[in-house]
Amino acid sequence: MSAHTFAGRGSLVPGQRPSDPAPDRAATHRHYLMCPPTYFAIAYAINPWMHPDDPDGAVDTDRAMAQWEELRRTYVALGHEVSLIDPAPGLPDMVFAANGAVVVDGKVFGSRFRHVERLPEAVRYVEWFKTNGMRHGVRDTYLPLALAEGEGDFLTTSSRILAGTGFRTDREAHRELAELVGRPVVSLELVDPRLYHLDTALAILDDETIAYFPRAFTPESQELLRGMYPDAILADHADAMVLGLNAVSDGRHVVLPVQAAGLIRQLTDRGFEPVTVDVSELRKSGGGPKCCTLEIRPSAGWTPTPAPDEDGSRG
Ligand code: ARG
Image (cartoon, rainbow, N blue to C red):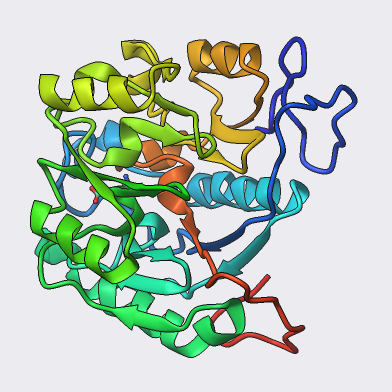
């Protein structure tokens, strides 16, 4: 399994440089936090993708690890920094780092999980930031009072934060985050249980451009999205059902599931560079590339200082 190349500008195999750069799309350097799927399993069902009793739904942990490692290498090949948090036995969903927090302007807004099975993950992510955050431009950690599942439901642009509700994160948490970071938070209501986190139904490509699957939202939320993003890329049902919108963009390269054929074409037409990965083992739990990725956004004006080594993180 490896990144594939598509016609036209195509996608980058890790390590490969673009031969035909899209001058209109600029990548910016990113810092991601990831958690290896060492203890990944389908041990319970908290979304319709998970079938703990079905042998066909069981995960091959070695394969999941290889797919996750390919994702990590893809980010590094694109020039991004990846930090790692230690996985914990008994927390099979901890690989989905996006749910651990959302970090805006150096402020960590931690999580309060809806399901008891995932509750202990929250403290591990906040502890990681308390220990390692300072040298990555993080200055503050906050635990919400309301239910909140991190970047699963909070997608950030420089002008606003799009916030999902309906399945996991409560509206009250949207207000808490707005107050903490002083940025407008727009609430969007999800309706399809298979697309239960905002990051399974909508992807931010850059500050002006998003992609989404309209039918994942209430009619009112669809109208809000049309008003804010009249030129958005609209994904079709097939792309949504392979979690194609669970994508990570640096403004130019868009890392997304190889199965999302229609979306890959649309991205290329709009001057983005799709970079495809296969994380089909993680999809058995309802996750994709974005779910495995928590972006660390340092506070404005912060500049990195070289770190000798890093507790709790490798690579
Ligand atoms: N099994 C996990 C859950 O249901 C998957 C989480 C996916 N994460 C995400 N950011 N969409 O909670």
